[in-house]
View: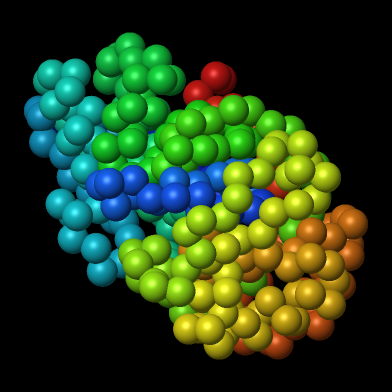
Length: 282
């Protein structure tokens, strides 16, 4: 029998242009406001269909067991929800650092849902896939949604926005920050006043997790201080990645050359349409 044909699907990273926590639900989830934008740093998912119902994650995030990996869980959830009689072999090429607040695991799960929904002919629309994705994590729906968005609730109430799409200098400090650690920190501000979209577009908004992470992870504090030389440096999500917008790619390249040689730095472009949406529609 010949080797199964593979199809390839991008799983982009995201950044939070600001992040406010406005309250907490009875189930422990935090109520938030944020603005999501994609960047052109992407993992890649390769999918080969199987004619049995077996699901195999042949390569994925280092140190994560198959049954704990969000890609495998996404495939299993879609298969069981839609009573699919096929299976799949999945391979993830990781480029998005883990524990960086860039949404790599959530993006991988979203890409798995979008790809297999099409390849298995499940026929679920975007809203239905977003509802499935929410069962896997609060950040999964934005990657299925596929457009830069203003988000509220626990991050699943999405409205499209079109912020500027600059070049960013993105630094991933040599540490991994667990979202659960930061969201459970007693010093985290959980009663930030709600902000309007107009306020955000006028430049207001901070990341309320930043102060907590800077205190606990000196490498993040150091990176933010360094990037602040070129503009308003910000942390994405619960960290550890930090970024600053630059006037163009050349300016970003020049700034990167001034960073320590051992820093993990990327020059990325802000995107208001996800590469996954482009792939899905082609």
